[in-house]
Length: 160
Image 1 (cartoon, rainbow, N blue to C red):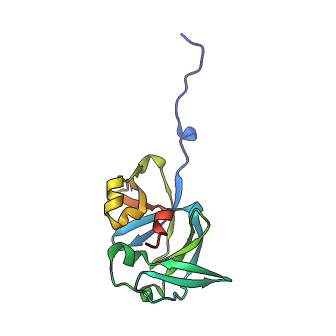
Image 2 (cartoon, one colour):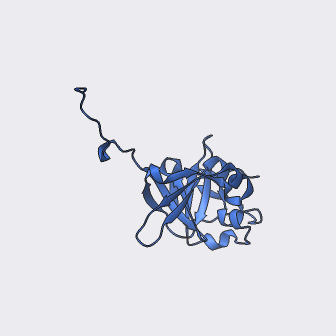
């Protein structure tokens, strides 16, 4: 028998939760890791034709490409007009480019336990427009589970 003390895992040794910014788009709950969020702006004019779900906003002395995810995910005719009263989540991809994602309601900050996050299958990512998400988190709540799709910022910002 060893004289080593028994080690047990307790809450102080648990992995810290992932901090995400959560927003709704149609029936989906989408999330971005907080460290990828550059800024959240109140409604701001978006310029562009609206045809391809891409526009531009002026942010200080910079121009930021805006991606209408509602249009891209659901192939809807939803134009940038719908976001005049909403918010713009400005994200930074891994090469430092800024992109804006317009949302209708204020995004929420949430802690997601790492144990609730799972990798999305590559077959799903290749077949669905929601393939811009890399992971899914299922969070148990009182009445119903909350499903969050965590966006892959580099897949999200691809313009093709």
